[in-house]
Image (cartoon, rainbow, N blue to C red; front, side, top):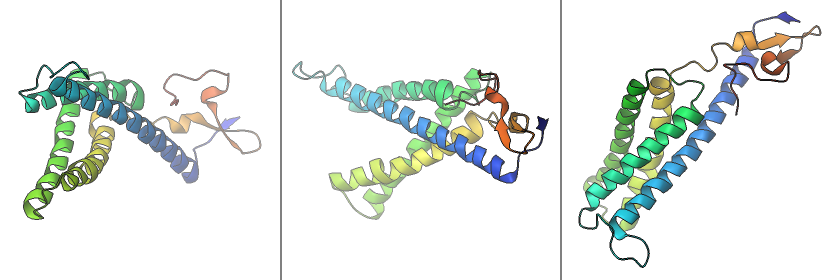
Length: 191
């Protein structure tokens, strides 16, 4: 087999494959973090079912901050060690700091959508609040965070060594040498 550079089609397909896998994993991690956030907030404020008020019943805003902080750590761990594990850096503290900054900016997008609905459109119903903050704001914030995490937080180039992975056999067909011997090479992207 002789090594050849991948075609534009092969490179585009590989890029799309990585993007789809990352987006799917990002969604799963986000869902888990959302469940953690919601469950903790409800426990902190309302307590366990049938057990009375929660330990932070009188301070719901602090309860929301605490629940969100725990969920953010869950999201960072999931994204660092699963979604973007092939991109993570060795500077863990810097990576976490950037993660927090972009989470706060994503939250600001949702709050801005809520503020626009409330104070510009003058919509004050529970439905309007949920559509603006948890619908439009959540979607826009999530898209922003996915882009920011890939671009700034977990910056490693997942496709940097793609040229060394694609091999042409004697018939000119492309193959992937990451699993030629039945095992996956270090640095190869797996799902």
